[in-house]
Amino acid sequence: MQRSIPHVAAGLAALAIAVTPAVAAAAPASAATAASCSDRYQVGSTKVVPDEHGQSAMSIKQYWSPSCQENFAYAYVWQSFRDSHPGAFTIVVGEIWVHSPGVETNPVANSAVDTRQAELWSPGFYGPGRCTYATGTLAWGSYDSDGKTDQRCG
Image (cartoon, rainbow, N blue to C red; front, side):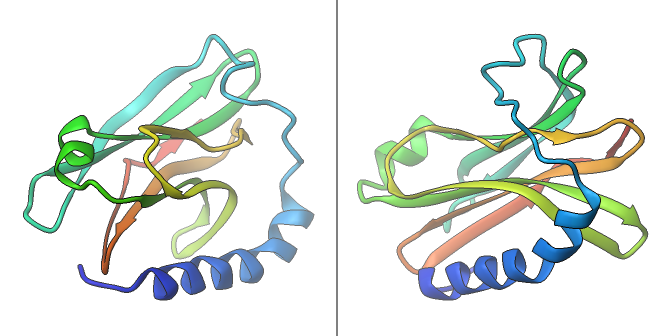
């Protein structure tokens, strides 16, 4: 899908502003990071998003940590994409909380703008009794590609 980076950034900013009041009231703050939750493991399937030529560009995964009781979203930008796209790109990754069908918020997200890094983790999101999925966007030039994992209820 072809979109401009400013369009993508504006959309993400609008989403963050729109959901912040609901999330602040509904979701406890997280002090955990993926690194501090060493027992984390992948739950659900891996979503692979393509580049503008249909080649694999980024993998999106969701992880669960029993000791931290939190979900994490993870994105990995494939080496083949980094080799064939020499410029900087933007990665956005986050957890989506499904309150009920059609009612979702984005309580935690992380981004790396104008980067060449391969990996990005979201902050943790308290997961027991909640349905969540990981989402990610990779944007470069005038293109972006996004995807989400399967929903997990825990």
